Structure formats: structure tokens, C-alpha cells
Length: 73
Image (cartoon, rainbow, N blue to C red; front, top):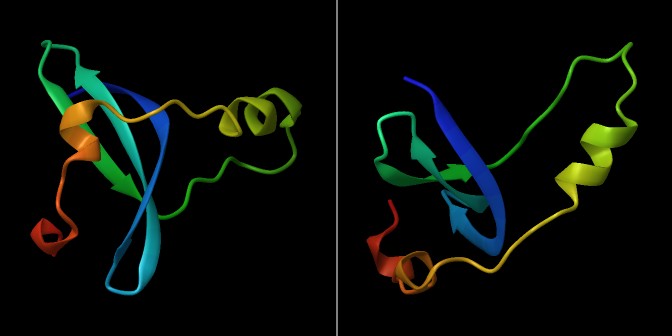
């Protein structure tokens, strides 16, 4: 499965760990969201564009913004 994700401004705590919510879509067109605590790239390469793009965040969709914190495990 391939998923294309975009970072949002929403951060939630899962088991005491802050996780940013990323929203996206599978290659089959299914909308989804992911709770990502960390993201990294291999060192030894030019990471300037990666670091710049990592700072880009958009507002979450109304569906993700409305997820009640009590629903998170």
C-alpha cells in the first residue's frame, strides 16, 4: 500500500507521547490519517529541503479536528 500524507497543525498525546496528525490518501483513493510521533531521514545527505518541508503544516480537516481525545487509545 502507498499512502501520501500531509502534516497538520494538530498534535495529540498517545500514551504520553505527542503525535502530530498527518492526513492523506492511499493510492486507491481511501482517505486516512496517521498519528506520527517521530520522523527521520538518513544522515549524510542534504537534508535542507526535507527540514524546510517538515516545517510546513496545514489546518486539519474538519473530520480530524473533531476527533475527540477520548477516542484515542
